[in-house]
Amino acid sequence: MAPVGLDTLLRQLVDETTQKSLCHFAPELAISATIIVLLLMRLLWNLDRWIPPYFTALAGSLTAVVLTGNQLLSILSDPSTAGSFFSGLLVYDHFGCFVRAMLALFLVLLIALTVLSGVPDREDGPDFYSLLLGASLGMMMMASTNHMLMFFIGVEMASVPGYALVAYLKGRRQSSEAAFKYVVYGAGAAGVMLYGISLLTGLLGTAQFPELADRVGLILGNAGGIGDATSRTLLLAILMVLTGLFFKLSIVPFHFWCPDAFEGASAEVAGFLSVASKGAAFALLVRFCTAIIPAGSTEIFTGLGVALGVLAAVTVTFGNLAAYSQTNVKRLLAYSTIAHAGYMLMAVSALVVALSGGKQLAGFDSAAAAIRCVEGLLFYLFVYLFMNLGEFSIVALIRNQTFREDIASYRGIGWQAPMLCSCMILCVFSLVGLPPLGGFWGKLVIFSSLFDLGRVHWFMWAMLAIGGLNTVFSLVYYIRILKAMFIESASENTRPIEVPTHASQYALLISLPVLLLGLLPTLATQLAHDVAARFLQ
Image 1: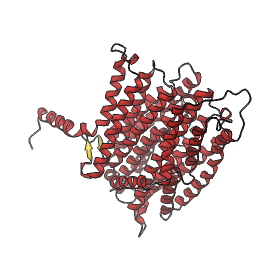
Image 2: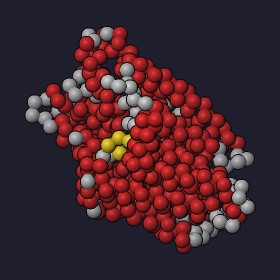
Image 3: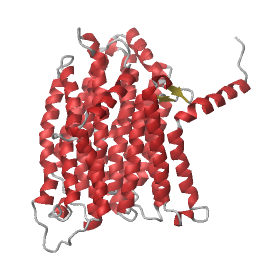
Image 4: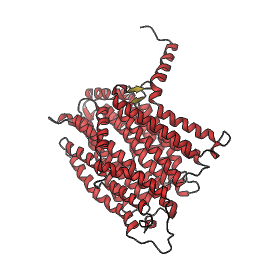
């Protein structure tokens, strides 16, 4: 076979990039171009003084929404267009398009919130929106990762701007302290994850996701089980990689940064970290877990799925119980975020058990069970976008009126801002999982997948019971917010609040999908099912 010349390789690279890769990467290119424009506006005749920075950020994020939406519709109508691009570093498929479209939609809604709340001010706008868009760019790449190199790059691109965003409230010691803790813990988690990646790729001899499962199966097949040194090293490498993702997801015991970061950051940034960071990290976690499980069932990965379930159960319980004693609303919602990460991790745990241990059970359709797990996770993430953003947006809008963020400052405002506080009722009850709201259906799909997989391993039933009990536990601390709003009376020296009409309308716009997804869940669940089925086929 004749050697290929350098000019031929370069021509192939250019052709592959221009004809195939750039069109799939169009939403990310739109966001990248928006970042460049934001940074140049200050240098070119001080254009940021004439054109509001949020206008540029909104234009770029809306373009990304249109492009991701078009890609999702296109791949749903023609699945043959799916495949890898950029020489296999990223993948273009139904799952990635769905998550990227969700992240782009969330970015638009969050930027609209910052316009209403006034964070950031006009002077700092270009820097703030550049960081916000940069983190979103990394998260969208996480959703399309197809290579361990892009695994690390995507996580770090999403994390580093987040450190600066937490500290963006300049002059506040609490914000600076929270950001410092976030940076230190994040650097440690990144180091552990990077070492795990190097171990994993060194053992397997490849970094491509499509090749990982076969190499893992080959090693486990030739080794003598968990007692073999190679198998133990492989499992250690996988756990180290998962450590980096668990930090992003604030899974116990890697949650310690979350309450401090949420309390120190603005409500807008806390909402961004709560929703977008979780969505991208769970997408990457699902990709990684499905990539490393070999075709043949193995007890090692069934055990890994159960271990994920144990972490999920502990995370849910700890998040709900720790929220009881909180007096700061953002800190309470931080523990709520930890608990909901646990609920979503239950779906991933069930997925791993379905793909590994489910094949051993006669008459059990492991493929259908796995699809149901991913379907539940995707639907839950979509509902979570609206209900959690709704909560944090209401916290930001009330903060602008009371200049406080403790629960005591919410006393009596339910009758002063009825529309805003009614939206809080929808978001709170949906987070609890009460019908007929979207959060109820999200939990129901995940819990039903746990019930089915109880036939494979009994711990899935135990996890279902723990999830159900924690749903009851969570009602208590969520009710504290509503009690302060509608039952408790404001103190005599409290200044009455007057929420602008357009702010209340924004809260209604964010909260209504929570109700609609509960009353009419079929379209969203069917879309999630189709995406999951295509992803796992």
